[in-house]
Structure formats: C-alpha cells, structure tokens
Image 1 (cartoon, rainbow, N blue to C red):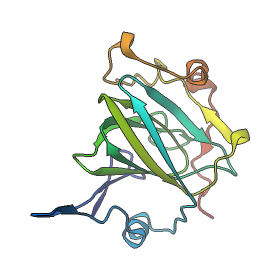
Image 2: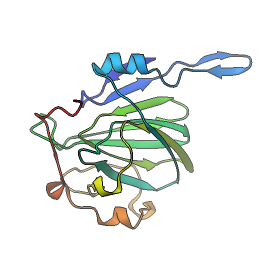
Image 3: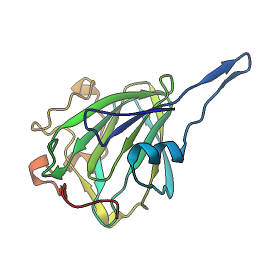
Amino acid sequence: MNITPTELSEVLLVQTNNHHDNRGWFMESFRLDLLELALGHTVSFCQENQVQSYYGVIRGLHYQIPPADQSKLISVIEGTILDVVVDIRKGSPNFGKHIAIKLSCKNQKQLFIPRGFAHGYACLSEKARVTYKVDNYYNKSAEASIAFDDPQLNIDWQLPTDKIVLSEKDKFHPRFKAAQYFDYNQSLYE
C-alpha cells in the first residue's frame, strides 16, 4: 500500500497493491496502521456506507459541521467516478481550491479526505458502487453543502451538462461564498 499527499497535502491518495496469480488477485484494501502513520494521528472509523449511482449522477458537495464533522476514506468497488474535494478551511493556503481524481475498480485508488473539506463525486461509468468509511456518525442536523456548479470553484465534472443528474436536495445548495467554513487554525483532531 502506497500513501501519498495530493495537491491538497492533507488529502491522501491511497494506492493498493494487487497480488495476481492463476486464481485471480488479492489485495489489502485497508490498513489502519499505515494510514495513521501517513496522517500523523489516529483515526477511528465507526460507520461504512455504500452508494450505487448511474452515469451522470453528481453527489455533493457535502460535509458535516462540527462537532459531527467527518473524515472519509473513499473506495470504488464497481465502475469509475471523478472524486472532488474542496478545501473549506478559512485561513488555509488552499482555501477554496479543489482537486479532482478518478477513482475506479480498475485503478484501485482510494482517497482519504480529512475533516474541513467538502466532498462530491460524479459517476463517469454506466454504473458505479462507492464505499466509504467515516470517523463520525451521520448527523442530519449537521449536514452542510456547496453548489456543485459554483462558478467560483470552476469544477470540471467531466460530464455533458445535459447528462447531469442531481437529487432534489443537491439542486439547491448554497454558493461557496455563503457556505459554512472550518477554521484552519483550530485542530480538528483533538
């Protein structure tokens, strides 16, 4: 397992290693000790979610506000997604910047998204199944979001506009400038 920082250095790309033989392949899909070594702090995942989406679906940009904020470890077990992460930590040198990384069942890449970042993804294949671990329980009253198409963020979702499918809720998220931010100078892992 190889864990490296992305352009948003707190967001980590996790590349698993497959071991192939005549039966198929084997991989360690998760190693807490290696993730914590790369993070420099502990993480305690308490909930795992699975989502299935069809081509053109965009989910996001979502996050939870403190004290229910969450770190996430995103994996794709079927299909391909474009995973997007936005730094929403006011005072951060990367505040308002985003990264977009293709995750798929073929490339076996995973993304660790720490607290203080908004997250969303677009389904680029006919169907995709995504699984993600979180380190805090889902809390409806802590939900927060940012419009996926905010011109300030200028995210290329790699989908034709007429093929984008959104939930009713995702159609009405606030713009980035009206979002709830995190404080870059406050530790999120105490």
